[in-house]
Length: 461
Image (cartoon, rainbow, N blue to C red; front, side, top):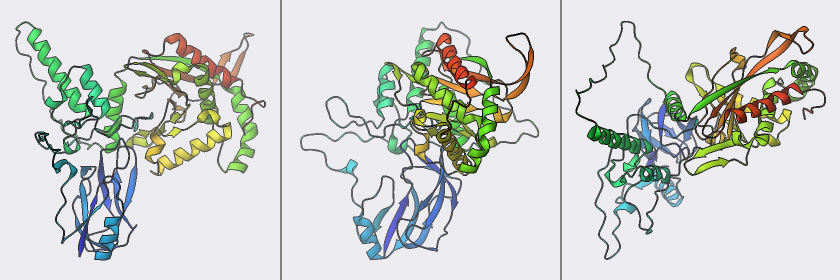
């Protein structure tokens, strides 16, 4: 007999860990190849991992509710020798299962291979256990392309680096004059994470400030939280922790907001005229959201700075118009899947895309690709009943728009008459490092004019 070790697969480039939701098989069960084995939850999506072999589930190494890093052992199978041989010859994906015949010794890992002649082996770095608190990369929720590079960078002389860290982490350390060899990595296999570097920078700056400050009375430590009768602790989910990390990162940008009122009367009238034919053709309703996203992508093309990113080297103007569309999932949180090439879609095409991502988000069937590549976000808070909000700009974006409730209001018209009109507030949040108030107002004005001009002259298809 041979054994098969199922390990936590790499479920996305920015995903470093997963939480076991539910085991679909139990020890002793016979499992066929491709049978669904276990549900895994990440900060972005939930997925089910299939078995890579046919065999008997011998041992479950991670219990439901536990969070483990990519590559961690999940379960052990007993398999037939022929199955083991076939699986051994098949290439395995990173973090996937590994067949280990019981009669063969374990092969040395590449890190333990003998060094080249004449070169002294690097001193071993102490292994660190995986952190108990997840630190997912920015949006996944990050709605933009927040996938972090996983390859270990090499120093200028081309020699392999002893320190395991992504290029972005190395760059952050370099900008602050921090020696990465002095930072203890808490990531998988001792990898130095961005949080490790940020914590080291904070300690370094605190030490510098303490050395420069005059002697003073020691500060009191922050008081510990004192529970109050009736308090109920709520454990953080992967999604809630990811949202917290993402929003904390986003708030480091200087935010500003602007609001414009939009007369939606012509749009609502036109929608009523075409919605019945649309429903008969598509099988679902035509929402004002499709017109709002259409107006947003037209504003992106007219005002490139709201379709941009701030970097330490300067501003990057994005050529693609990939619109993140925020979907609320109740108290669980929200996700921002991306509508790619939104500027190439008709009103009907945008409505199909919106319906698709909303349905799949609520059914927990979004994939990692659904969250990557976003350049701008539309937050449709109107169905929630809000009239004014202050959206937070996602990391990597320069702006976000919120469309508020469409309600009937008494309005004084240009000829001083009073009329009942459908009105909506349109709010833009922007990173003031990239976008100034006049630029944000220009983008809002374009969206307002496009929405107010909707009528029979605008084709749905």
